Image (cartoon, rainbow, N blue to C red; front, side, top):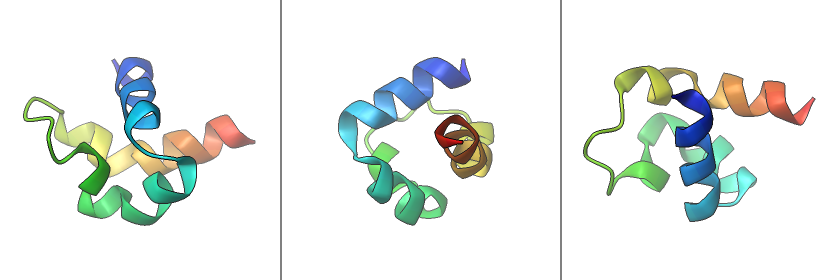
Length: 51
């Protein structure tokens, strides 16, 4: 669930950190069960929500 993953990421990082570190998955590095699709598309998802 993208929304739930995004919510978790927001709790761990501010938006700037997510946008900067998305590809490195730093803000989610402690979550072993995060699907790869979130890492691939989290920047797009966040940017779309900010618009």
